[in-house]
Amino acid sequence: MAPPREPHPHPSRPTTYEDLLAEGSSVPTEGWDFSWFEGRATEARPSWGYAVAMAERLGRARAVLDVQTGGGEVLDFALARVAGADTGESTGASTGEPIRAGTGDAAGADTRLTTGAPAPKPPLLTLATEGWPPNVAKATALLRPRGVGVVAAAEDAPLPFADGAFDLVVSRHPVRPQWDEIARVLQPGGTYFAQHVGPSSVFELVEYFLGPQPDEVRGARHPERERADAEAAGLDVVGLRAERLRMEFHDIGAVVHFLRKVVWMVPGFTVEAYEPQLRELHERIQTEGPFVAHSARHLFDARKPG
Image 1 (cartoon, rainbow, N blue to C red):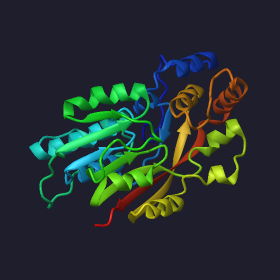
Image 2: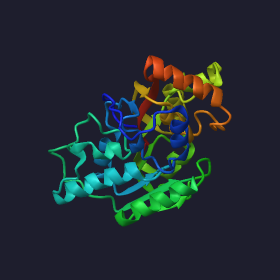
Image 3: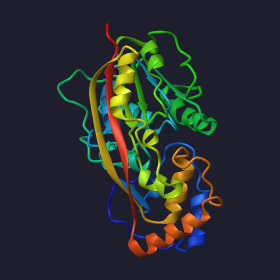
Image 4: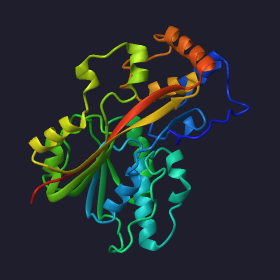
């Protein structure tokens, strides 16, 4: 989603309930490009600026794996920064353009690569996995020009790589981290650097449609639980930060598109199944202003001993 700022209605944008539903239902959902939400929904960004921080890690790595790359947008942005630093060219990151294109984590961050360190170089080997066929196709088209191979692999399947193949594994918003597999494919001394979705993320919206959720559902993805799982797999967690961030939905079309795109929020969501709740929420937004929710994010920095 776009970073927070005052929305300005577009003169040609639909305004009726029916037209907003139709538009939100028709926008393509493949990849992690959230630029369509510009002016319609906003989300504050984590202070650590994951996409920029990933670029710094890539510039020091030799063999990299991006797990569940989505449409490849974040990896593409990070590799572009490294390539720009290597050649002395600007990547345009300071404009915030990649955030409009869906990386979502550089807004407000210092977009300069660290100075005083050895000049970053693109990794010798970079691979990515993705499980959803439309995203596999999109990521392949985006990342092939950068020499990145995209491997189709289900999110819950073993990673199709040899033991100790990578010195850096990255991931932005994996559905469920496979700690044993991450530890297996890391070299001794290698790093897992990732941004995860935290507990009860956007649950104001989830519970609007599904009703109150049990504690075990609300507490899933808790960073301390994930820390314990990572350590049980043999990794040392050397850094863990968590933040909750304000989100605003300014029209019902944005809600519909979000729930179609982030399918695990309200499983089986369709406009037809939830039409009464959608109509009520539309009227609420019209009279009270944007629907406010809060996303949860945490940053993992874990090392494999050795």
